[in-house]
Image 1 (tube, rainbow, N blue to C red):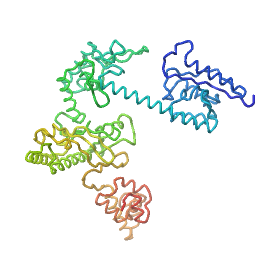
Image 2: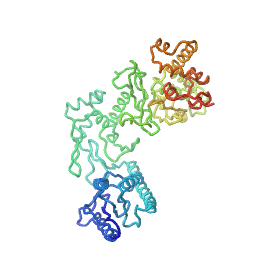
Image 3: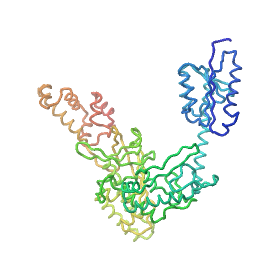
Image 4: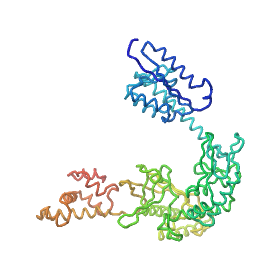
Amino acid sequence: MTGPMIRCAIYTRKSSDEGLGQDFNSLDAQHEACAAYIASQKHEGWKLLPARYDDGGVSGGTLERPALQRLLDEIDAGRVDMVVVYKIDRLTRSLADFAKLVERLEASGCSFVSVTQAFNTSSSMGRLTLNVLLSFAQFEREVTAERIRDKIAASKKKGLWMGGVCPLGYDPHPDPNRRELVVNEAEATVVRELFDLYRQHGCLNAVTRAADRLGLRSKRTRFSTGREQGGNRMSQGQIHRILTNPVYRGRIRHKDKSYPGTHPAIIDEALWDKVQDRLQAANVRRRGAKPGAPVEEAAPLKGKFRDDTGDGLTPTHTNRSGKRLRYYVSNRLISGGPDRSGWRLPAPAFEAAVVDAIAGHLSDHARQHSVIGSADALQSAVASEAILALVAWIRRDGIAAAAPLIGQGRLAAGQMHFDLDGTALAAAAGIPAGIAPTLLQVARPFDCRRRGVELKIVAGAIAPQPDPALLRALRNATDWAGRLHAGTPLQKLARSEGISERYMARIIHLDGLSPRLKQAIVEGTQPVPLTLKQLLRAPLPLAWDDQERMLGLGR
């Protein structure tokens, strides 16, 4: 033996369960090859540890594998010096996961070696080669995932059921080679009853209570492992998903689209349309608001816009100083907690920006006589006048008039895009069909700048809004600085105002702002991120040009 003993652990993995029940399976073959390699390195002091670390039926795309976690615990405890694998992708297929593993192994003084690829991580060349091979392994995994996603999308366009837990009312086809759903009559009765209940009550809370009284239960599913789930009382959310699932109309949903399915429908078209109309009408009202409440007090843009990641904007509110403040926020901020990429838009400003975008868009087309596709000059002029009258109505009534015209939209940094409902627009303006397609596609400048967790909207021609806190602080700074210069001691001045000397000194410091900054604060044209908190947080430069540069007031 030429050196100290190197304790070796063998790690094996297989992605699928296929063949694991055999007397000699893939895991055994990998272990045998690794053990032979360790034996060939006996002269270097390599010694095989007796414990086996085998993960059968586990993907290499995650590190959450039982045997791997046990191995990592042994490495952390300093009981393993070398990890031996058959191929690198048995350990991981992810370059990011590999970086985490190498960092963890190096912290414990452990290396690993692949017996079919002539290198190990104890040398820099080995680590370089490993990075290259793992990049190809990750590429292969991502390409495979893309192929699977494309196959699922193509199959769903053909109306095929692509697996998963079957919805209430359906079972998978008895022939496993046929990707179809068949009606489960007992469960289909429950589905029809839920739709009838909503048609009667028009309220999810009432339907949930009625379903509980009638003993309606969720689908009971038994998996191949023997585990069972379902058969419980249905929540309001479960009932809403059932009422909005197009599978009951004989369609297959893929992301935000649906396609005619190969399975029979459970709900007829008339009942489906009636329920969807009532659900949509309920969505417009603020949660908890009584039917007939003014749309301005509700959330008229609920369900109509998504943020730049595709996440829906959900209405929410908070109460501050006795006032109710409304917002539209990215749904993940409600369901998943804090996220710096999430959007939190003040509802009045956002709704005003949408109203301004619609009014400006319609006005532009009316002036250009591009409202309808007809070449008849008289018809075009009449349609343009009708649209201008509609614009005046929208500007007068605000979001209450604009919201029913909006289809679906998306916000991104720099621009908002949304579609107008042609039928609703024609009805509101009183013009016949034949609206020009370009009239229904709105794209207007839209920008948001972060102020803490909130985003301030800068869009269209919204009038500047002076910040009351900044104005008050600037007014106090000017007043207090003048009284100080007149000879009033700071201590006496602070006592007369009922504030601390330290706070007063910080505010008085604002009197040294540049004239351009002061004017911008008074007019409300200061940079959006500029707040009183920001001004008081960091010391201001004495030079006015430096102040303006630091606070974002470019020339």
